[in-house]
Image (tube, one colour):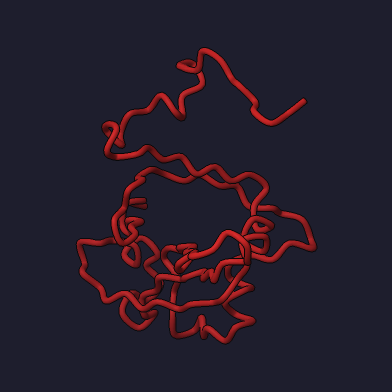
Length: 146
């Protein structure tokens, strides 16, 4: 399955990068599917092929920002049982977005591990890999710790 079907962007996209995550698999952990099913998304009609998390516009650092978890879906009637076809951008299938409000803490609790890596695009090539390859790391400096 291709992983480049949904590209993250913001108004100016000052920072570009990648994300990697591992889900929790405990009995008390919610999945993306459960969140959208509880909110009313009909999985017999829609098939999520990608998810996004968005902080809409954080104008103040003193309050919880407005956040959305977004399911990018195709219609089951257009892809049938072919999961690979559902995520093939070459088919040009229309994307339907479903939004659920969620807090950053609720979002973070969905994962066992979550890493978001980005570079300031004004300072270099966003494809530069030194931020993610451990063999390139020469030193780690933990700030604010005693």
